Length: 434
Image (tube, rainbow, N blue to C red; front, top):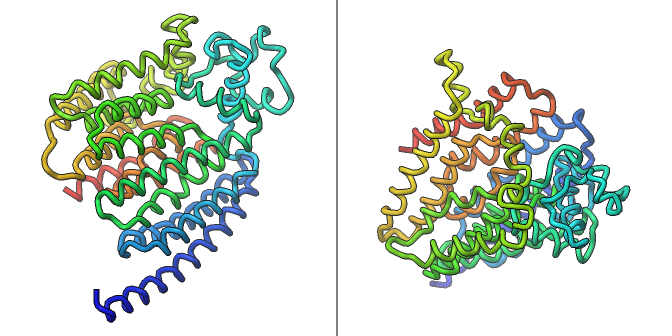
């Protein structure tokens, strides 16, 4: 590089640094303002703040994608990302109370009790109750735990150091550090600018859901990021192991299997299956059905059995005035995912990014078919955006915040309207890109 080119690069770098600093300060102020939100009454006000954060985030994403690799931008951007998380870490969870169940499950296990055996309100666990955690556990008298075994293991380990909400949230942020490290390694391997990791680190959905609410999805995403990294290095057994660990935290990462699979390989499937079985083994004392926890009941409660959760099924029912059976939709969804999976397992050309592109594709299809009711279910899409900056996928992660408006009303018509605002533009944008 000539001296003139170096001078030009330094000038651009300094301008980008100044821009990133201004955006970072503005974003930090919004996080500090946002933590003062209280209850249902503030949710619209909170979402207005998030909308401003999304505009700032888009500017940072554009900057990350358009600039050459810069250590200055990387360090500055990650410093702000850490400050964002610190800004909300010590505040009580506003958007979700799931974290109290995490701590409770860890406490139950530390007492030598299988977390799938009793509901929190069961008298067998009366001695474990306190005033800081137990009263805030949702559905404590109506549902067993729903979290898979790797999540349960993490709850046990984390709560052995402290059973505080702040500590659990800090652990989830620590898992994000692993995610950021893995994404940087992966970006370097593809020759991308390292500051593209800010597409993940600055995303408001990740900050609010992990540092703010402490959702265990942060651990699932860390395992996914590591699986993507070792897949890049052709470590098939380790890929299967890490993907299985992610699945053992939240079940949906299993959808990535066909995208990460190497054709005619038996190592990854064997490692994946063996890891899942071994993870469940310590908890099988309650039986093969009860080890699923409240998942069957959750499926009924959330409208999966009736079909009310599924956006595409609801639209089909409204447009046709026919009560399309839920079973027919499930068969349709399984068929779509099955056909797509077979195609992805065969689609392994020379394009190095193909497995990442395919992963994002099947993850998005899965989300449209499932149409989950909670915003944090969309967080696992964010890491892929560092490599595949897909406008439809970006939109999906932003629009997921709209689901918090169900606090103001969750009638079937209201939910359908919100999900239409989320998925209809996504589908239109996806078609326009073709």
